[in-house]
Image (cartoon, rainbow, N blue to C red; front, side, top):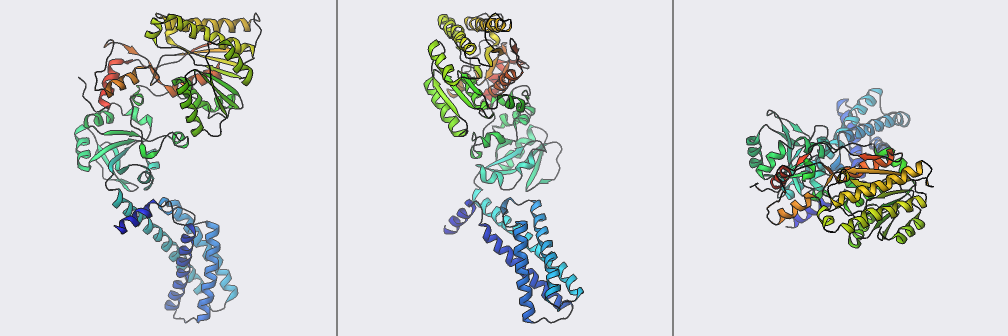
Length: 548
């Protein structure tokens, strides 16, 4: 029990003290030089005095210390050592021999040129191989100890592109940071015997081969290396996993890890959003970042699903100040805590208030003097607005007018209104109220451009359809119904909708803000429409259940 506790303690240590490694390397290096001297003595049949041996010991110690400090061989975390580390060791060994040779020639006459040459070759190879083998031994022992402790973890297979997988193949990366034990790499194609790094590569071609593989190794999860891989394999590997009830996980992006959004120990599962039937639209965020750098930005509806994601993305752009404006207390408190944790260096101010209150809106413009405004505040639930049309008009029309008028009065550079595709030939109160808001903003923009109204604000309107996972969208509703055991309700089996993810929608809003010159309405390309019934079926399968 004590031995197991000691092993557990050792494996939890982040690294061995670098000075311990330094002195071990020094011991091996000096021992290599003394061993070289002994071999020379034996090969050339020469005897060396104790004084000469001591001199060799002293010179080797000094030269080794100098070389290790120059090459910094002792600073690397050994369990993360890669092939490049052997190059550093080879450099240190070569430098040591190169320094020792002229010193010996100056300080002693006991060695001939033949001794120098033979001794330097033996010393180099001994030092290089012993230091390399020492590191390989430590890695092997560490791997064995960790494997003996983590053998109870659930087994996992990694699936990804050949270019993306090697980043994961550092033998200790996932082992230390995940609740899973990596069993190997998964590929599609005819069976070939091969390995990548420390892992076996398994090949499957169909459902039956996949089932045999996961049964044989008791695999509980598949790890996709990125979102693109999930979309490409949504009709093959995802289906295999759904039928076999295998968990599907996605490796967080570097941005998510650095932003503190994700811990590797709780790898996120594949969501229905990841199976969106098209590639996400790629946008050059560098130009957008340059246009927003050093600006004061106001976001209305900042606590909502779109507004909060806008705030998250804006926090990456080195703003002078970000102002969050919303009337929902608890969501505002939540987004405040999130931004404080993830972006401690960003200056942002949460402000409670209602866009329908003109004096409150003006006080915010007067206090913060925003240069760019993203207007996301709105009532958007169609059935509720049908039942409460006065509130739809009051918020979506009069509220927008208040925010727009104050933007003109306080010389805002750009005003980006977030609208909806339901404003196109509206058939419901919500869509009609948003279209009225669009018309007001456009009229104000045209009046300013023609000189009929004083001001410099450029108004830009953006329209998009259903956003996956946003408040009130079909996905959260289906998730709630699944949690209750079903059924999932669909209005009509043939209904289709266009979808995009929340982060994608917000990136497109930022792109419109950058591109817009004023008076435009940007209509986003939503891709291929998706049947709501098909979406429901996929969600049921992802939950490990059987439709029908």
